[in-house]
Length: 301
Length: 335
Image (cartoon, rainbow over all chains, first blue to last red; front, side, top):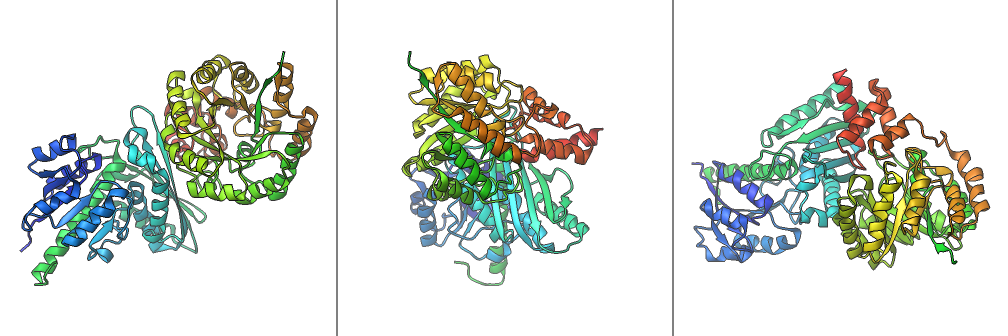
């Protein structure tokens, strides 16, 4: 019988708080704990208002919970630095970890692309916001014809780029480029990020360029990309192509925009929303997996 | 009365790269650098127009890898220093390490004028590598002087040795340059620089205004080779600054020769203020968008000026070349 799985969130900042809004609406996950460092922060107070137990000593607070109260899935919305310790604790306690930081201890996953391959992993990484918006498209194109080079340009409003992003611009581009290769299937990846301070804040946009190797049917490309767009929309409704892919010789360009759901973060912060929505997608798929296994009588650690 | 000293930074091998679609060869760079070194130019900037790591579909692929060009330039200089440009979000600290190893002495870390804090990582890394560091605040016409100063102060706090007000769109008027430079000079402890573009025909006047306001680093490009209508024409600048009482140390006749004999032959189109360049300055649009607007305009049957004006309305910043195609398509669909 399918059961709701208990979840916890580490990090009550912007991403963690937006994720909280989404998980609260889930009928597969039951979020019961929030782990932070400042008991009085906006995010912690909001978590308590929503019935969660909060711990101001970070993930170490989890040891204060009875085993029967502990989450079976943790979402880490802190930082690459903090993730190391968080993942050690999760590993020790046998708790599955969905990592929204750039730490990437576990494999990169993107719900519409390769989640099934890594569904049994105890730690999976959500790449970057740009990575979630673009690697699925590159992968869809790669399924039709080999992609030798994939380049993405993520343009986000200055307002939606927090101190974490700003201090780690290089990491964003390097991690995303890596994912274009590992998840997208490109031989070589490159990622560019641009911040635009225009007011009113701009909606996140991503431009995906792929250089492909070999002959291909243009119609097949457009079909594959549009199909992938639909798949992404099942967990990120605000994701859409701005126009049909542009094909010039062996360069295929796709122009995407991501409008946030406006749960906790404003609508222009689509870059953060695609992160939380994708993480939720992963979390719910893990729940399905756990329930499938349990119904077959396999003991879940 | 002693002459005020000014340090000239030559950008033909970087901003000029935009004008020739990043097609510099090792031989061209060697020859031009030798000429500049001979003319006593203190700093020679060598990179893709959008900085190291800029070679891409988005900005255009380089014919020759930046690292090869930097090595070639370093090889032939006897006293000039080699600078590179780096835009966080495009180039990384890893790219910088490579450039440093190839011989770069200085790095100019460029951000949009409101986003100085993304440069911290790179400025600090550059200082650790023992490089001279310039903070480059782009599209300076888009930010009021007081706020520009705040951003400049951030770069200063990260360790920049010089901060520039950069008129990427060639949109500033001389008074506006004076306002910005004077404030930076008064409030910062480090040197202040100015980088001009000639889209409104004001590059030389703006550069002179910057010098009068206290800027001690000034950019020029031999024969004005650069994005849009090009930069402040170096050889002209040397003559003007000399007449105005500034000491640059650059040999006027020799820099004229570099422009005439080495740069002019490689230019594919004259470096003039054509209607697209004028529109860049008028609408306040990043100069490197010109060629992209012309291409998209042709592709969609739209006047490139309309594309540029719309880009200006949408307050598009440097680096957003992909927006050009977007805007062109949108305008075409409304026709």
